[in-house]
Image (cartoon, helix red, strand yellow):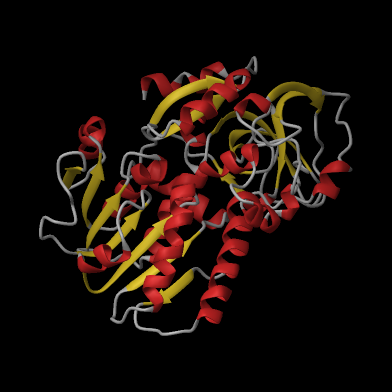
Length: 394
């Protein structure tokens, strides 16, 4: 498994090493965030054959641009193959930050070169989206874990559609106590929160953990997962989300519009930051000895902040650690999230729901930056309503 970017605050290096760090950062994080979670092989997808002469509706875009480039089109239903061996009938998906770069293209030509598999000037793969929740429609002969009729969730390429093919090791059985809509909100955001806390923050019971950006998709899961590990959790969010953060189990809630959490005298063992709102020296000051700071995400603001973080870390000394990573999808972690949901340790927060034909509106709302939890996109299968109705009563 690829390692997280880890910079000990005590190392020294010259400009050549710094340049190598930045080059590696741009290449690795950009490739992983947009493509690694889906791990598509365009050639294999192109060879998919029509299954039972079926057709489906899917969101496509033929060029990079605003959400206006998204179109709802009728395509051939894909067939499972030796790589993407599970055909899933999708009942719901959700919007992620990586979708913005799939739709608009990377924010700079340098990042676009790093994302060469997605296309430098025009997208190579027309379909978008990654989170899925649905029912197995068909499987390839080499699939052993799933069968038609199984309810599953996870990630795949081209999730904004009625059907998509997924890798067997990128999906897991859906939790029995959650609807398709709720489960669709989990894959990438839940995976990111879990890996930030456990894999890179090495969270331990009793630690003081701060989650900055606790009202968003990753943040709402991070608060709940940190509590499940037995941590004392402080959630930083805006005024509108303070009550929600408390309902998710946060021990302390800070409204950043009224209080600067870096100036209240508190210190933390672990900080998970999805907002990138302060400098590296500020975060260093509020970390306990041997504390860890984990920066999450790949928004424009975070990419810009990374440059100053890397330079600052190279010139700093101490025992505190700075880490940046992009989550990598795997079945084991989806099973862990399923178990947490079934144990009522995490509950997905859904801000708004849109139909498949309203995907452009969903992405526009996401880009406004005020999302509470997740935005879910639903499909209009005739047999879906009994399962989706659970979301309204749960």
